[in-house]
Amino acid sequence: MKPIVFNGKFLTVAPTGVHRVAEELIHAFERLVISRRSAIELSDVTVVAPTSAQRKPSFSMIGVIKRGFASGLPREYPWEQINLPWIARNALLVNLCNMGPVFHFDSLTMIHDAQVYLTPASYSLGFKLWYRLIQPLLGRTSRGILTVSEYSKEQLVRYGVAPAEKITVIHNGCDHVLANAPAHGFVAASGLDEGRYVLALSSTQSHKNIRVLFQAFADQRLAHLTLVLFGAASKSTFESLGFEVPPNVRFVGRIDDAELAALMIHALAFACPSTTEGFGLPPLEAMILGCPAIIAPCGALPEVCGDAALQADPHTPDEWVEKIMSLAADPKLRAHMRESGQRQAALFTWDTAARKLAHLLGLNVLDRPGEAGPTDMQSR
Image (cartoon, rainbow, N blue to C red; front, top):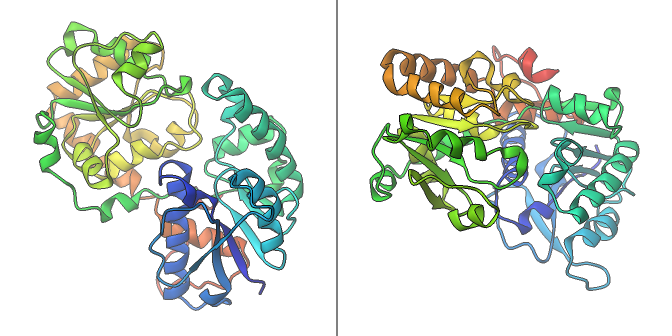
């Protein structure tokens, strides 16, 4: 077996979004190889990162190697395109965060979505041009393309990033949130009452569609409830872009995993009104913690949440008001959504994702006796 190199450029930024996916998947891959007989030793698996990487992931046996850019330039993009393929020239390279070096032909590249085509207004001009240039090249030069949902696969084919026969779906896991000890005191410390707020991700990207939640919470029928937004975008950020922020909206800013787990556990609901998502990890994280989810029936959200989440039209605030009010008024509905949500979310584990990745890498990873392999949903 060839050595395996994971592209560690994700270690240069905070572990959110696709960067969190990369770290969790490598952790699960490591656990898989340790716990089962395989055709490769972990000494043959490394994560190679730029010297600018500040984070130190807690891999127990997989080594993290930092290498600088050949000409001394600090930028991660030229490092990824020029230095990384040379470092990994004798290895199978795995890129998990949408990008990778074009001139490394023995590689697998995970492209999470086609948002630069579907919602160009969510991205800067430079970002769009770079992704639209590089990703189709990766679709041709990589050994294979990975993505995170059947929906994303369809869109990548539609926009010519890669042919269907070259794309493999590996669903994300969401069970990492169960490892966090929730900071329950954070809810009261933030001035919130259990079951009296709806939680959502704070983002100004157009496809995240937070405007419909602002419109819903401006309705007097929700005046007794609070919309809690976590993430980088603040009230002033939204107002500078022309959003009208109702008085019953609370911004808690960037929070850690323990605080987020507590907010999810004690929320009335988690709202995800996105007009498209390549996967939709936050609603599943909430669901596995027992928080009912309300989603827009768009992108991959129906695929991953199934019938275990309530749905509301992304352009109709009144539907969001009605779904939130129904949860607030009906304890039996809340209990049903909690139970069905946990069952659905439990289908998505990082161990299952790691088994799929290991098989693609050609590893002889055996399931334990009596243990089922990937489910049909997760092995397509």
